[in-house]
Length: 459
Image (tube, rainbow, N blue to C red):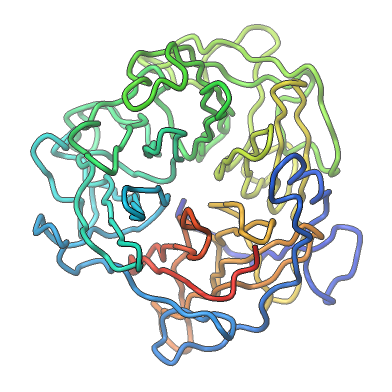
């Protein structure tokens, strides 16, 4: 998720006006949450202004408080080594007796200062520095255990939970064995069982494709897995679906294989060319991927026939809501090869209607004090809106979005990595809520910090 070279500050605004008066999405928020239990809630403007944290870690609205659950460099409670760096995607899964399992990605490359410690039976490639750690929390929120749940993977960016309460962690790389010292091919999805990591092991789900994975979402009705690809250069990434041979078969069923397909929107080779919210395309096609393992050619460069395939820049967050899957494009830049420019989009795909709709568009620059740049990880909030992690320049926020399209700051990273004259702040990632919706968990990417935020959440 982390990206170098950003030079501008982008803010979210209604595309039709009200510059400087506040920020909001352009689009139909009612549609975004249609068919979900969350749609019964109206949402509210927010929780008030952020209060500076005297400890200099996390600024929150009045009435909210945080606890630091884990911080990079501290000893893992398992004794396996130090807490790894680069905290990224995360999920909160229910455990037995009121416990919660936080499964956390570490987006470590070969140069990582604090790699995920290798553990026998849980290590895919000893040369890989990424992986996942799992924190198990008691009913009161206290940390009961913290341990490695998979190691030896690379650039574990995001992923997603499954209906059977495991985590699919995604490698955002296409490096093959022999590159950067790796002894095995990378670019896969791995399943992590937080209750018993050795049950899932470190087995790549090769049928789900080898590419620069970002996030996934599972259709709970039939087990189809949707996957985003965050490719860094043109041609940009694709949006995929995986049709498992054993849908909804519980832990381990994805190892039985399946069919990987890429989305083709007829007449739309690049999603960034679509600029108006509400634009809708029926008759979406799914094309079998010729070589899911990308033995010779990256998937996005493979031959999908004379009609081609649909690409998009910076495909990141992905989640299931109601009867549809939603996915995020963080931005698109024509200067980098995209067909159009935007500062963020949210797309909705309705499988039953085979319809793709652009439901949210992000807008141009404005007041740099307001939150909203490059949406990344995203999740449903207890109030019926969204929580979105910001990944851009300057001050970094977790911001909320109400169903009326109003945007408010929920948290601000107060950890200055730079100087008072030239401050720098790490991005947020991995926002998730506890099963009872009473706690928001979120990561600061660097310095790697996992927070638990409690307070008067509206539900």
